[in-house]
Length: 485
Ligand SMILES: Cc1cc2nc3c(=O)[nH]c(=O)nc-3n(C[C@H](O)[C@H](O)[C@H](O)COP(=O)(O)OP(=O)(O)OC[C@H]3O[C@@H](n4cnc5c(N)ncnc54)[C@H](O)[C@@H]3O)c2cc1C
Image: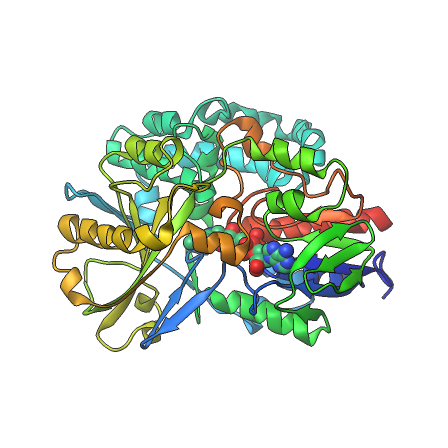
């Protein structure tokens, strides 16, 4: 069947989730597609590590909004269930504090009167923003938001106004400081400080409550592997260890000197890196300088542990909160140093997939927020000590005798995210959402400099996280189709 892209050539730079989904959608629309990846393997942040009988997902571990992934497969004429098995998690997450307070995020929690009140507002906001914001290009937002059918939903805005912070909203919806901190934590889903993030980000817990948290059987890495298998089967030319060095309107030049001409170019790496290093246009340096000004999102520091025994107090996903959240973000954003007492996320995929650890062992994936864009920290020097500190905090406050049970330990720092994924300064989500403008006007999907250049992935619109990255691919290919129809 002839489509607007039949006979057109497209090159996709970067084979993260965004690049893989874009390549498949372009091929489905009739384009001849070349997918370039600088690393020896595809997947970007969706990486895994195997050692001594343990397996850890190194990046994303919580999957939500499965309908967006299903839509990718449906649009490709495939059934997701033939490729990936999703397993619902209950609880979605267990939250713990050093004072002994804890709760499970499950249907019971979301039916509490205060949580139900929050969800009612967040649902209204989600309905208001889903089509107009999440599923549209920024150029289409204003036309879509002034849809008269959406007017009744505007009544939910005062409770979650973009001009108030998520922290302020948390104090309005919850009396208990533990629950306020729980709600504030959703700002970190986009690498931001809850005191500066617009209250509209309270739609994230709504999405999590409505669509649930899922594990992908085989590990989240299976997501990248299955898209790679599909891309290979469909004849997409995949070149790994192929780094793009420059982009101009006629195509892409690799660091090897090889030139690939293309009608359409899609960049899946960090948008800032593209403007700083790749795009050949007289205004690219000026655009890069402007883009460098707003605060970048936080990075992450990961500790992988192999642990003997299975602690019955742990769920698949666990959060151990710090006692002083404002101090944690002050240290990360203003002082640009690792938090002394960070909130710690612990994922134990072996709870859903026992083969991820040897018998009577568990695979601990620990993640804490870390500063990005720091030149003063040498992570090869500071990393081992900081990893030990995180383990010590867990042992002192939550998991007695943890250290004596560790049989394997290693870490990943912001420097690894910078070198492995090309994330500028190690920032995991591009820019922090520290104002309404920064939150809603991320760098656009269509480049204003080169008419055939598009961006996909977590640093462009609508933002970071697996479902949003899939949406960026959907929007980018729709825009390219529009150009030729
Ligand atoms: C530790 C961690 C935990 C996370 N947890 C979650 C979670 O629980 N749930 C969730 O939904 N999301 C989570 N995320 C976020 C999610 O992983 C990302 O938003 C998503 O994977 C980003 O995909 P992407 O396609 O935008 O980019 P990336 O995965 O960064 O892929 C970009 C690719 O482009 C390649 N590339 C860059 N420059 C070039 C070049 N010049 N030439 C060729 N190739 C190039 C890179 O090598 C990379 O493979 C987490 C991320 C991290 C790091």
